[in-house]
Image (cartoon, rainbow, N blue to C red; front, side, top):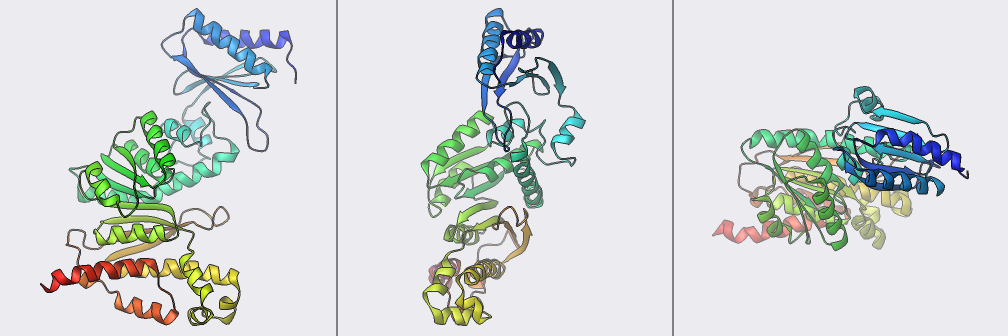
Length: 400
């Protein structure tokens, strides 16, 4: 739709009465199509007032944006007040993010991350638009991360009760874009809980983005570094001020999950939160050996057909991880944190050490029965190998 001079004049008249008191930002967006839209953001002078130069600049920017097809225009006056104008009609609507509106945005259900309290985080991770709305395209993701936050809460509560006098120490291994780090940090911030959270990843680009996001949000206690999982312990000690209370790994690919679990177990981390991803290792072992596949699979068809074999290997991998955690002194429960229609990698492993104050004692790990079972199945999981190596390394000091 081409705008006339009359359209632009009405747009100016609609915006002008709301500008004297200042504004935080102006958001110009195209109409939403197929769940997506383009968006431009112009930062404002703040809510303390605006001079004529700033007002003239905003009105000129609004006209230019409207002529380019960015008809939906929103003035964000402060954390709760908005003025919305559609340049095609020129009528200003004042909106307030009150309790009823917030509840509507949350889908009619109280969420861990509210749009009025966690706007900064939701915008930073791309779920909330700059004008404070959550599009249909991102509503599902918003519900998922809020639900994940709630599932992590019992673990954090347990740890906070155990050490009430100091910050909760969290290590995020293979953190990637660090969405779980930021969600945990925001959840703890909202509750007034002190924490230190350190994320590591081998990719410099994602670590750099996470650092920039943490600085922009101003959440204290967050840090990120480029490091392998193997090097993470030394990297994290200084950042956290001690060993981690909680080790997390969200979608660490394939055996990176096993490295994360091995580090947590061997260092006696009191709690673990893990979402496995891409369980390729055992699938490859079964595919490489027909004899192994036939021994491991409960039915001939599973050994014969790759699709069935891959699915079975996923279950076998995570089942062995749970058994190994249990064998090393952890109580484990499994939770589906999103529906399987959204992602097949939706299993959250929550584990807490049964005796967190006790020294790590590899000689008490019950690995032999699991190792025998794996040998019978013809598989050799990375986590088992890592724990066996740790137990062997500890053996000389045990006999000394």
